Image 1 (cartoon, rainbow, N blue to C red):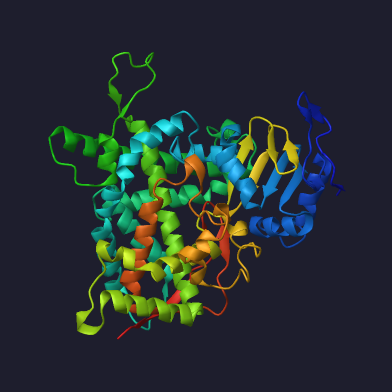
Image 2: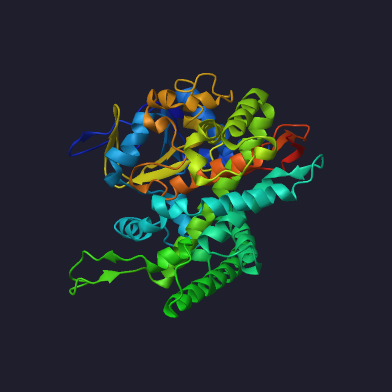
Length: 486
């Protein structure tokens, strides 16, 4: 396979502004790319995370690969990531894999482009206002406490499944103002079925052309998507009908999305100057996006937190000491409240360090629509830029001894000493996750509620293997044993 460190795109070496200068990397012809895949069939396959890890070791922190006629730029530098997400963000759009995600969840906040994205964000913002999400604290703690009651001591259980169950209950109560009933179970099942097909939709070229053909995987997707849309549409209709009957907003996110309105700035579309709300289709897309973001990401973050604490008894002891100090011990022990949240600093550091080592959203991508400059390189439009929270947050230049679990990496002083885009579990720039504050509160309060009562011991013979799909979840069940704290 040919390798080069010179500009690779021979068809366009320059434009009117000057020559292109591409990063070092590898140039693979279409034929050599196909041969590469054939050879991999006879060897143990290398996953995307392992592939990402190999590139900077070979070529440096900015790498160019020419593969199947396309340019890919792999970035592992915080200043360059800032350029992509903030400084030169207007030159980028979501890359192909994220745009394919539209097939699954529609035009939600994760997938939509400007100007639709900014409009949707302005409508949805009140649903995630600090005062609004603060009202969910009691629901989070109540759900976590109930999950703690269901744990049987000394009996192995799958922590990944238990964390998913807890997260599902919290999403049901905060997003829909309901308990985990048949409708919520149906949403969970159909989302899981669709997520299992994600790699197919990313890998198959022009998958959009085949959506109506009787292909087994595509047919399964169509059935799951239709059932999913039907359940969410029914929940939206019921919420709208309740509003029409004059019933009060119960504080759930769906009610807030339905009632949020913004002033429409385009006078040609809105000559009267009236405000505008989301259509039912737009609300459905946002509900599916919020469900996925709030369900999968926090559940995976909690799962990895319990595993890492089980492997690091000193950090676990410090966590328990903080909980005992803030929440009391013995008969004086009480459940956490929103008022305790600011005092649970080490608990938050534990959650942050867990998401450094195992970020639920493990990689991101963009495609440039105009020439961009990153450091000494000048890159023509049409390249796919890939950069990962997983790889960046394990960069030993910014996180010495990166595989060591150390929550003190996230003291205020330590965070201030690092560039911002060394750690970005919720993205960055104008597209930073709108629910970040909610996710932090949910994670910290859930950890505090369960850890004040239980300590968890890892029960499997080998370490868990992360599986990089839409989120970074354990590949297999993650078995743990609970021990009651006295």
